[in-house]
Length: 96
Image 1 (cartoon, helix red, strand yellow):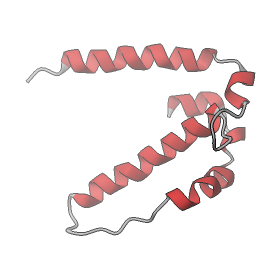
Image 2: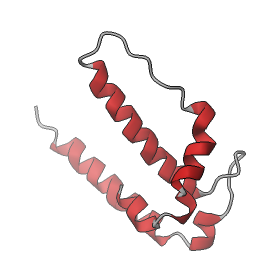
Image 3: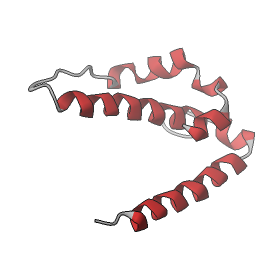
Image 4: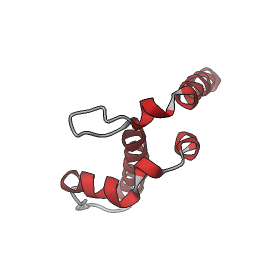
């Protein structure tokens, strides 16, 4: 099965959005935006964290019959504060 069209499409999507994120002005990424009063920097870094957490869940589900995962929802604000996303390097966040 040839997945080159899918792969190329994903790469084009990444190239397009990577540049759009790089081009965002500092004021735009640091202004509080949503009902939780988070910035674009905080939201994107939090998504990176969520991806890492979900990745390990998928791997563990392949070899464990039953898993109990922590409920991160109640700790979202704490995770964001502890990781200091607001002061993270924007370019590194984009690369992640």
